[in-house]
Image (cartoon, rainbow, N blue to C red; front, side, top):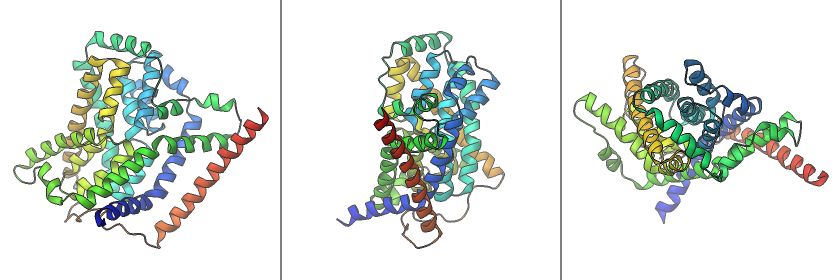
Length: 369
């Protein structure tokens, strides 16, 4: 049973290394959610323009990082009259430009990947907007809107929780700290399954899958341009079948990087949370089969192009991490009594305080009602 315990141990050790970053990211995200109105967001998405795309990207970055919640919020905005391109920009930014994802990237893989994630996300949104203008049929947007209006509204459980508005929360309490605590706990409830799956899958992959198997998926030799493109093409395909959500992609990304994928291939893989198979099925439910096909293909092509461009830019600027890669970025994760331990203890204390605020106010509300 050594492989079982080793897989569990590696997953738990990686979670311990990133716990403080997750709490920090969710805390900042909760603060932003309290002060950003989704009603204002949807009113600003009425047509596709540079301003609406920039606003959608910024508000998406301030929103939740749950892929399912992002799609549900995007569908709601689309039903209220938002154009399709800003909706897709919002969905992507809310899963790939969020603080907690950047914090995990910094801890597990380094600052170069954080910078690449940000630059590549902006490139991807621009490429996606261009492809929408070039290949998305004009009549398909109205067809998708009609289909979205026919949907009964029975969304994924985490989406239903995530799309409750801050205005509705203020009917129960006027406490800003209560709103922040509720948003913090809500994000954890939305993402704990995906995060647990990401750490466990990455732990078992690191323990069980030989490095040669990973290297077989990616070209290791041959012309550099061919290897760059092939890795960027394969990266999102792995993300598509991994069923992992936004932040949960990062542990597996560290495994892929340790086992031979190119810099751009890692970035394109991280972006693939929005074309995971469960989300493609949700696109089909919300927008119809034809629109779901166009969305998936446009996202996939944009991910590949963004990965290639980021790799070329960072290579030109000499920012791609050099030197021999470790056997695995997580294979030697251990529990140490160091600064990470103290940061984790502080993060646990903050999380417990926020949980206490949520439980206390909820109990008080139930008694008064």
